Image 1 (tube, rainbow over the protein chains, first blue to last red):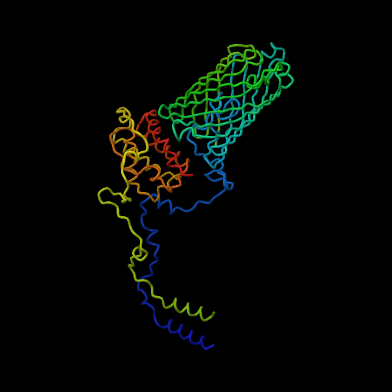
Image 2: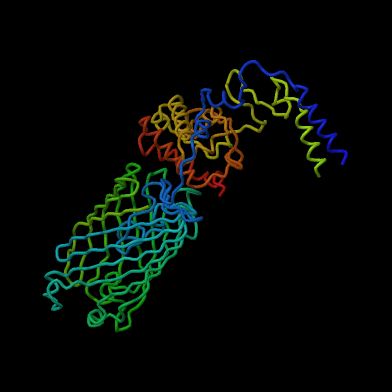
Length: 333
Length: 178
């Protein structure tokens, strides 16, 4: 108990004896001049900027835990142009590219609408694709094929419209379309499960089934030294006219290996022109021809890409010389 | 308990304020790297210099070097790329602790060497130069876009721009770490 008075005494002494003489001028706060000083370097200026308030919908995009939703980051046009089947590609050929503008660790979204006007037919397709990093793409799309006057001629009704749903998946297994060894393209495997919504009719036309799955193997590379994009895809399919007219034949014709090729020339960051070729089986004996196009695509903004093409779809359901215009708009995040 | 608390209070009251003008860097052993008065660069650890460090074989095309405005044009494009990247919120943090003076010089030398414009590359190899920076592919894309902006501003034809990128793109494996 004696310690308390002695401590109090020490305190009193400490208080009585001035530790240091009081400064005459107002006390200096050490950090004040630092903050007031002219800050020269950009990194320091950024460090001193107030932290902005974080919201779920700030400029970095929607943030939900670890995946970065819609944050973008891909180089322009390297997400490809939606194909008529809803996958990332070049319009009619599937590419190894992954839809959406996301980078590894991100999730992106892509939506498209395409119209093809032919002498005797009209094609409309629209769909969405979700990309997970640079790894996986899942897509769903709908195609409507208007037979117009041909419908009446074939006895299926004026303006009969064939409909098909396509559910696609694509997995990048190796390489990068832009980076890495110049001899190693981006390689992807995938499938497209297609369901014709005209089951009774396509069976009447001779098809074996109204639903089937295509299997694809794609390789795509941007050859920077030549500003050329090269794509080759092998498709194992039994689809008649992509599946609009069903799959295989009742007579037994089935799966077959088909080829899709694209060549593109990059005019600028935003513009590319090119040509495509897609071989198709002719199981039904209706003169199902290979498809070709020449296209021009332009990235109007980081998110909106417009594509115009001249397509030669050959003969469709015995009506030949189906050449016309292709217009597509793609929005990607 | 009470004794300890009181004793510490006493000790704190008795403490002297540090003398003004203390050299805190010396107190804590901080070494300040002085910039070289001639080059303005901060010295780096010695390493073996070689053009092989540039990471690719050069083009042999006078036309290509001319498209880039020769040695001076290339140096300007490299410096502009660094400036744009330093101001680019996507990747600025990567450059915050780095010597921009040296980067502008070595990047310019690398471009100049690769484009066959008659320079030697004196910088480090790509893996060493980017070690522990944690560069992502998205960062790389941002840098490519800044380089494209710099080349576009300098009036470099797009096909020529891509020829430089063609030399740089295969190096991504040495640069991207995650």
